[in-house]
Amino acid sequence: MSELTEKGTLPVGITVAGKVHKEYEIRPEVLGDTMEGEDQGHGGAGKEVTMSAFVLSRRIVKLGTLESHEITMNLLKDMDPADYAELMAGSGRLAKKRESFRAKKSKPGEGDSGAA
Image (cartoon, rainbow, N blue to C red; front, side, top):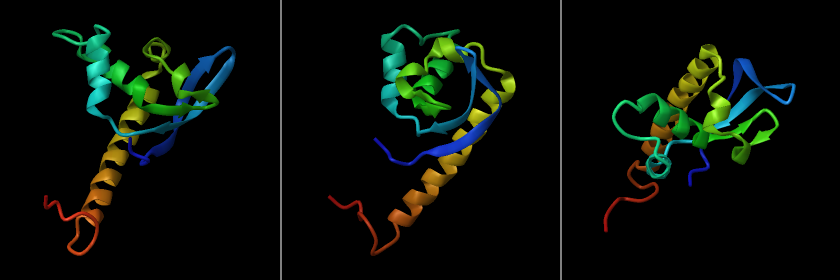
């Protein structure tokens, strides 16, 4: 799995046991996130939002003091839309960071040439 992540702050935060969690760290999406969602019955026609929430819950490495195993799709159901928008913006920043990382790695003379 990639060590590349993006950190940010949710504008509203998610409250768990009376504590508001705002600082987050998100990792890139991998195919296994979607596959696991399908295995658990979250995919299919008309379930795009459910699958998106599931995949997002898998990608959040940290939320405040919560660790990844504590961050579930059900926890995200109560998320403020502004927080969801920030996570999507963070995801976009991470995608750009990932592209830049790959571009640097694939420059001639650096990293893997792609030849087999």
